[in-house]
Amino acid sequence: MRAVTTISNNQLELREHAVPNPARGDVRVRVQGAGINRADLLQLAGLYPAPAGSPADIPGLEWSGIVDAIGDEVDDLNVGDRVFGISGGGGQAEFIAVPAEHCARVPDGLDLIEMGGVPEAFVTAHDAMVTTARAKPGEWVLIHAVGSGVGTAALQLAKAWGCSVVGTARTPEKLERCRELGLDVGIVPPRTDDGKLDMLGLASQIREATDGGADVTLDLVGGDYLGAEVLGAAPNGRIVLIGTLAGGNSNLPILGVMQKRLAIHGTVLRPRTRTEKAAATTAFVADVVPMFAERRIAPVIECVMPFAQASAAYDLMASDTSFGKIILDCR
Image (cartoon, rainbow, N blue to C red):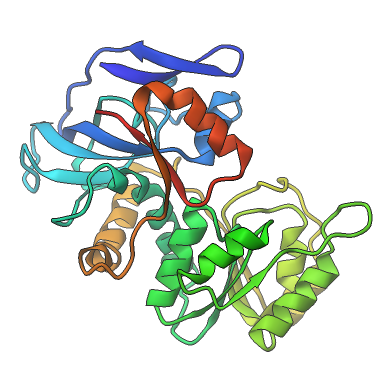
């Protein structure tokens, strides 16, 4: 089978690999679409190795396709089923073998290739906002990098959940596109004269936009944004750390956390155990998949690119100019 393969010198190419066989409890999927995520860029740079049990040199955390083989002790999926799901890697290939409990059926009528850009983004967003932060209808949700794949997923879920949303992005154009998805308030984070984040200015804008502070924050950026989130949070607010685009370290206003009685959670999906990923998938199937079936939410797609153009697709992701998901057509 062909697969996107990471090689030396921060490069990748399509290479031939053996077709995987499903083990007990697994299914093999003929991949149709595979989303690209920033974790793939980190793996390509040698900074985020695949967890044990996943291919070391084939990236891909989310995919969609058709079940074409079933291992022993699989009772709830059949050959020919249209599915999408998550994995520790290996999704950017013509075939992938994965635990059956990490798969969800794709609702009828939805484009199977586009669904390859759904699982990682929407499972991450739902797990952070609903399972971890327990967002409630009527609350204010703050989403940094709201124009990203996870950001646009979280925005749609928050609005479907009955929340109000304030989002940040580096350009007004991305915020304007997010308003079409229901964004209530958009903020381009202010900068100081030397180009650094104006933490106090951003915190002030957050409090003003939310009439007192954000109840839930989904932080896809990290760095000094954390300080602004603490200062811009409502009492008893919940902050979930998801990404580190602006850096993995921050100055934390500890007194602000104490005085507001804030809860700060960290989350990452990829290294979770098989059981933990199954639980996240089950929650996604229960809460999110029906919204896709009812057309209440949809993946936001920047583009679908041919398998042979994987390098160009990675370059586009690295440019930070895309809006929503970049998907590889793996047929």
